[in-house]
Image 1: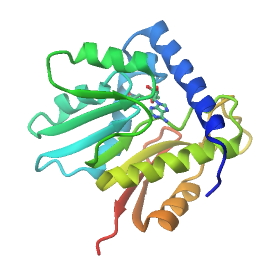
Image 2: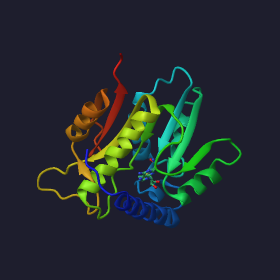
Image 3: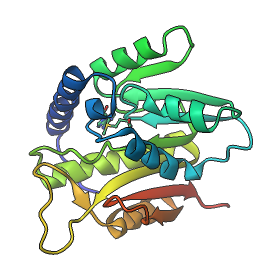
Length: 217
Ligand SMILES: C[S@@+](CC[C@H](N)C(=O)[O-])C[C@H]1O[C@@H](n2cnc3c(N)ncnc32)[C@H](O)[C@@H]1O
């Protein structure tokens, strides 16, 4: 694993935080406010990430990069009969304020930061690695590594994250967008986490989802 200075990482987090806070100011608590295009694709991402979870019984879930808490809407709509002990974390204080306002009076916990202060059965993170702005690639990849290791440490039964695919040959990615291949991160997780990896790559969005579960002893 690479080792870059924590000052550089802090600067990267601050820039990403400003980017999302501005999106929220401009568009409010809506898919555009977290840089997604619409509810159906936001929900499709949730569906793929939640493939990891066993909805037959109650479980605890950490949602890293929770934005304004849209995953709670999704869970209420598609899994109303499963008791989910939800915990949302986001680096943007404005997102956390918005989530708390939306779910006021419902005893749902939100936390501002880049790591969950509590362990859970599952951890998911939708869209947190995409917007790298002008960070140097090694720094951004160190940030991803650190986050994946943290997710592994705090997720008893596994975690799921998504990434944007490398563009097809002849096409150019949007400036400031981090694009990668499933192999890059599947290999990292296999090497550093003694985990079982599944890749979901077939939902027609130019993205893929990585499911990481501890290997049974
Ligand atoms: C693309 S938005 C998605 C929001 C939400 N997951 C959804 O799908 O509606 C990414 C969110 O992650 C937050 N974020 C980005 N990087 C993060 C990090 N390293 N740790 C915690 N939150 C992060 C941003 O502030 C933003 O709210």
